[in-house]
Image (cartoon, rainbow, N blue to C red):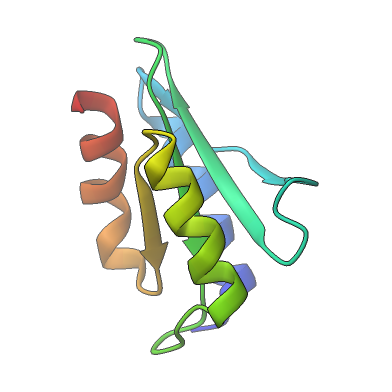
Length: 94
């Protein structure tokens, strides 16, 4: 499955959940990453790197993930639509 298709599904599933939204946004701080950010009404936020099925983040993307984690944010790499529900639930409850 292509990256754009997975990203669309993440957005659609996020909008269906009453306590979450999953807008996709290019974050200028992450100059090499087109990263989706997921917000929940309880003040939780997480970052989701969307990749095509089986793809892995590039070294600079991994560096950005480490930075976000050091700042206390959860960061996920999503390459399969089956992971979406679990990721959104983790962000909502973390």
